[in-house]
Length: 482
Image 1 (cartoon, rainbow, N blue to C red):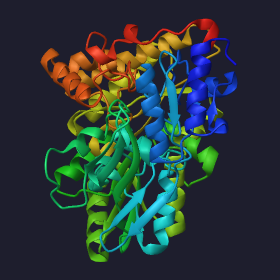
Image 2 (tube, helix red, strand yellow):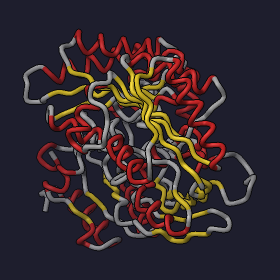
Image 3 (cartoon, helix red, strand yellow):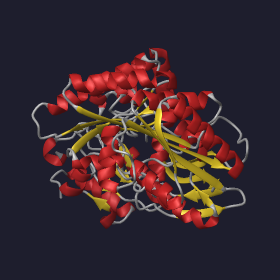
């Protein structure tokens, strides 16, 4: 019991709608779900619900609507922009137990899944059928499809195939008033406005997805994976631009600088050269003749731009090991320091080299260690600021450096996020990218789904633009939930 009759009544109503053991209100559970994988703090969770069906999500939303309570949906909590942090002690709806793959149609290349299905689990399920789910975030071993939809997640292999939005056909959504809507459809050209496309990337501010129809992609007949080494990071960046300019669009093009390469090699032993200033991991897939031609094109362009070594993965095992190194890069830095701030901006490919030089200078100015690993093909930068949060004043320097990286990216003609979302991390910069009129129309769209602004409030839109006003969040006595 909380000691507050209103809170106790809310918990009791939720427990009756679900089951008492799937509504948690103890301090440990709420503390655990009061933050995500970002460096942002200050979240306070109210009751935590674990629904297992659409009807249970409806019941939660109706109880919330009747009592005027805010609601925050949450997947695996791997988000890096603070999008799942509960502000103002809202009801937290965890979709992790809605984790069934409901149906797979290989003829129409569609899979219906619940939002709690782990990204990699879907591809593992599809593998024996000759298919996979193309979006592959680096956190794919733990992140969920629902979270991918919320943030329109990308991944190393989204260069040619496109990010999550390109692979979602329909979404069953429980709206903030408890009604259920089907957005999109399986028809080639669904009637009406593309509300599916509006919902993808909505960061939980428009409702909660309960069933998702995704496109499944046939496994390619042939794959070639190259590892190119460079004496300068800018040479790797310039190679990426030159490959795309030559009309070759690989399945993936990932760059890692020497600092992260050394950490990865110590952690995984993937066979990365530790004496190179940067490595470029490039992959092409398709018909055998075509991939051989594209692989040779990339090798030739790489050598012309200063590649000191070009290596072709000899077999599937070597290819898998190279990708294991790339996808465990963030875990590898634990050898160096206990904490990191992983940034996410996008710049034009032609500005990659210039912005990277600025990133290194920014980190040096704030006496921070930075490592760069990024989706080079689409200009999606992921600088890792490495630090120890126990060091006095270091978090302030980290956030100041992060702000300068954002400014440098925007000044280069870039955008705020490629895949992590806006959350609380970048909302204060939204008016740098959008006009007041733009933001007003975004707020109107949000209100069309959620007129009372109770779905994940305090996120995305900057303060002063309606639903995003943090000061409007429901205040909760510290002694109750604090």
